Image (cartoon, rainbow, N blue to C red):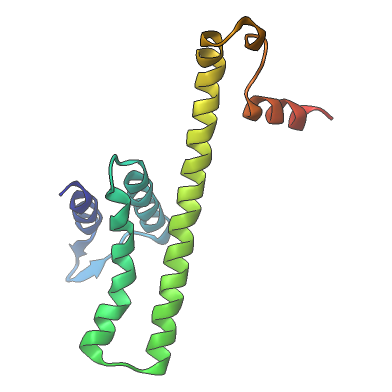
Length: 134
């Protein structure tokens, strides 16, 4: 049910103003969606499967309205964009988790190994040091 709380939060940002619906701005909508996607990637267990739900939106519309080649192209484009966005955010999360694991190794893990490893550094730290050199 926690995944639906984010959608409810997103829906609560819509409000009625002067008898017409006023939505949040494009940047606010982007940040809300990005935050929801990031939270799903970070959730324990299989919560990331929820990220596939927005792909169904255009196909539900096709089921209600009927198939047309133009609408099918829009649906496939939406699927490609959403999948790319979700995997891009997942890749950023993966890189962040790897960096954090390497930092933890540099702080604690290498000292549990033999003495010859105490002066070593993680691959990420070595790459960052190499990148900083002119």
